[in-house]
Image (cartoon, rainbow, N blue to C red):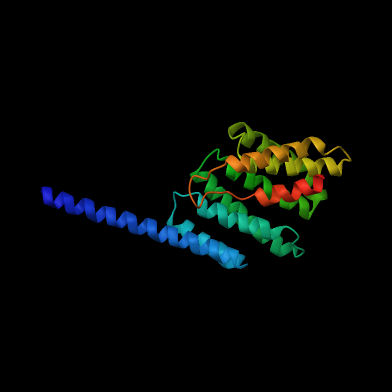
Length: 207
């Protein structure tokens, strides 16, 4: 019996290691495709991983981000709508797995921003308050998360410019974000760590 339990434990351990290996290989391949400017292939890979890793919020998060980023500047309204609706479904999956996650809140706010950018007259009044609310909630949970600080500052800069207000206070928030990026350590190689390049670019605009 003792030998049987040892063999069973070894077998289960091998299975877990194999699953982790497949997950890691898949995620690395998806990021590689994205880096090769193949966003559709990368998003599809993340979605396939998400269907297998049903308790992991990262694959649907990354698939959603690709769809959201690709939608900014998209002129074909049918394509834009399809991308953002798919992104919303993926974010819903991620939120169901990881509740009150500030990284997902930032991505949800970016999705709303994409709708607003596509048609401010239609979506601005209804979605802008939701963006503000999401950033406030995310900041309460993770005030030193550099993506939370960066994304909120960029939103505030855009709003200030739209209403003809001073953007200087929010540029200071970006300087704070840059310091936070220097200290930030992601939980794993697949956790979000994006945003530093965007901060540098925005700070140049502040000057």
